Length: 198
Image: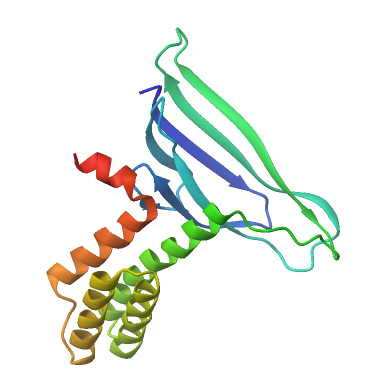
């Protein structure tokens, strides 16, 4: 461990909203975007801590650079005499009507795709708790289709079986809920979760 009690605080500009925050690695988990401080745990020497932050920015912004948020990381560095440390960064973006097309980094696309799968199973459960059986069934069927396209045949079958149960007016089985939740999280960080289980 290099840093203990790592925390991130995000202060969006007045017209910007932090919509979602999700810790990808290690130990993938959703973070409460409404909280002032996001706890990230320990930062290890040879292991990356990564997260996705989703911001909602206003439409029709003027061209040029504009600030989005101020991000501050704080933690206790174990090797320092003054252990408490913080780093501050202002996050800004360039706005242009004729921006050059840039390729989205494959790692980001991959993470977003897998995060979508995790959110789909979470949303299906929420909809079921709200009594919206039709939409919960549809979400589970879409989840099954996407998992199958990724080659996750057994997980796709589990999602399909749960969709059928929900369509018949039953709840998602305990085994199905745990399997879908754990394995869609596992897809996000694979090796990191595997190491944590050993």
